[in-house]
Length: 82
Image 1 (cartoon, rainbow, N blue to C red):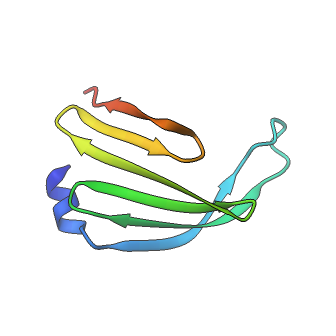
Image 2: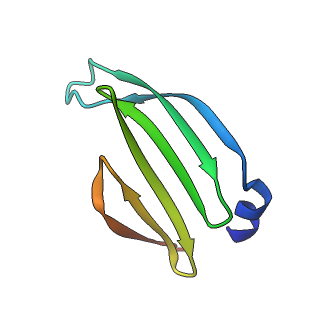
């Protein structure tokens, strides 16, 4: 992963996404989002109800740590399982 991050560091993407909060699946929230790559992390941001939400994946030898201002404020360890 570190090699991929190094190769793509500095790249940025912008686009749109969909958020499905309706349990019936009938209502979709559309939002603008951005993603950028650093040497050791992937960062993203998106808008929900006019407020900017941000998240990051920081990569380490065990996998990655994920933090997101909307999903959870505490860091979650993501472990690679072959």
